[in-house]
Length: 174
Image (cartoon, rainbow, N blue to C red; front, side, top):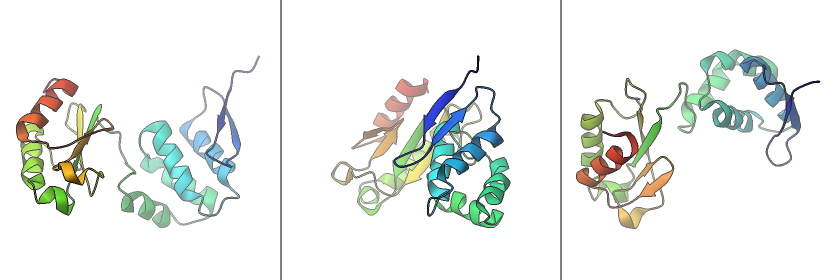
């Protein structure tokens, strides 16, 4: 008996049948096949790869380029241009701090500097123990409650150093 799973690709996307032992390359090829007729297929494919694997491994760039008949530079350019795409796995906790004007006016830069000091990393990096990834965003839609941040998909407002420390302690024991 065959063991497989059926995966539906987005709205209007095709159906992908994937065996449990499928390699990453074969999975990427299956996603490309499901979106082959779509205009601008690269973005939805990259979003699916990111959702499934947590990041877009640089090793899939040549596969995507070959399958979509575009250059590696084009694929790499899209991955590096959009901040939603990662080229390495994120930490167990993802902390996003807003740097938009409204949050800057109420102390976002000082909060970011504090987070970098506490975590021992810079924005865009992950702690060596892979517990926290620190990212910047340019609006969480929580402008009236700045400085704003997001920790593991939960938006928080009126962040102070103490409140950020408490959230990190709650999330990862720091």
